Length: 251
Ligand code: PGA
Image (cartoon, rainbow, N blue to C red):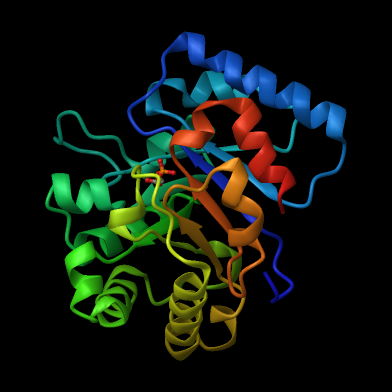
């Protein structure tokens, strides 16, 4: 965390949460109120059904909300999908795109992720573009190439600075309790930074690169102190306000 960029701690609730889970937003608000200033921007990405209520609850706080996916079109005959415009209308400011669970489970390729990122930006949202290698790709020694390709093919050319966030999430570290080693995180984040600067010039230096994959209160400090790590994308531990808050305090 060394390029003077304010870190972002983002929670990804995935397909977890009904009305009762809004209590966690209330608890987070209380903890933040007690703590006063924190050193990170805070984002929660609950299921789309909860965004509007969460936004209303947290109006007076610095907590921002985001979606977990969007369609590449603004509207139309796409039964079951949600557009970036709709997320923005519900009060979202960010949207996670290209998460490995969507790349693997819904066959999303980088070209589609890029189209979605363009739609997100057009709607005034900041896309959080996820990239990451599988365990087999790491074992074959091709992780940097795989991730570089995902970055190059998934991000809009006009993005940069604070209008884009990248999340590096090794697939084998998601939800497994096996976080990547800090030296591997440092190496991959430096590689992503070089690719961003090559693609976007100076504004590539200001893009926040988050690490994701089994970030918990007990490893967050070490992960967040790693060079070129500008925050974290937190799954499981973001479902409990106290754990999520401990990660925020680790910045
Ligand atoms: P995890 O999930 O923290 O539960 O590993 C991270 C993510 O998928 O964004």
